[in-house]
Image 1 (tube, rainbow, N blue to C red):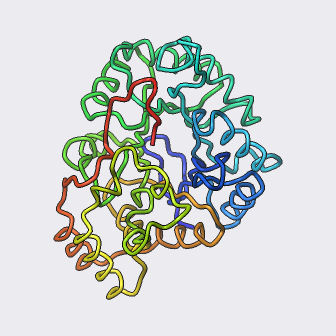
Image 2 (cartoon, rainbow, N blue to C red; image 1 turned 90 degrees about the vertical axis):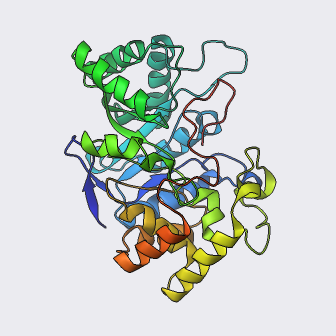
Length: 334
C-alpha cells in the first residue's frame, strides 16, 4: 500500500480511502448489508487501507454504526477515521441539520456514540451553508478539537471562495480551521481544476475526492446496458447518466483496452495520479470490487496516457453535474 501525507497534518494515510456510503442501504438500492459491509472493511484493512470515510447522513446513521462494529477491536491508532455532519438527520426537527454550533456539537456526540470511539480523526462539514456565518462553524469545530472529540476538521464540496474565506477567518479567530477538502472529482466533472485545486495545493490542504468513477459511469458498465442493481439504474435525479457523453466514454474505453487495463482502473488511476490529490474515496459492494480499486489507485500512468485522456476530457471541463457547492436541507449529499 502507498501512503501519502494528509495535507499539513503530517498524518500518513493510504492512497485508497475506503468510502462507506453504501453501508446500511438496502442491497436493491445499491447498498451493502451489515455482514457484507463488515467483510469488505476487514478486507480493506488486510490490503493496507488505514483511511475510512463515512457520514452521519449515510443511511441516517447506519453507515457509522456498521463501520464502528467493523473496526471494533482494531488498534485505534492504526486507522484514520473520517466522518461528516450537515445532512438532515430528522424529518420534523428543524434544527437537525446544517452548520450551526447547536447541530455540530450534537451531531459530533451522536457520531462518536455510533462509531464507538473516543475521538474522530477528521470531522468534516459535508456541505457549505451560506446563511450560517463560517465563524460560527469554525468556533464550534475549534471547541470540539480542544475537548479532544476531534483531531482535525475538514470541509466537503465547498466552492474555492468558501474554502478561502474559512482559511482566513480561522486565522483571525486563532483557530485551526480546515485542513482538508473533499470535492467531487472525475473525468466527467473536472471543474475543481479551475480554482479550488490550485488553492488547496498552494496552502497544502489534503484533498480526498469523492465519486472518482462518477457513480460507476466511468467503469463502462452503463455503456451497453442499464447495469441492474447499480446506483443510476434505479434513480438518477440529477440526470448524470442521462447527460453522460457516450462518444467520449467509448473513446476512453478504447484507450483503456489498448493500455491493458479496464476502464474503471484507468479512470480511478487518473484521479490518484493528479497533482495535489491525497486519497480518492473508493466504494465497493464486493471484495472483488475493492481489490480492483485498490490496485487502480496504485497504478502509475505514463505521461503519454495522461495526455491522451486530456484530449478526450479537457482539463477543467464539465459534462455531468457533480461539483455543486450549495445544497439545501433536503438535498442528499453525494
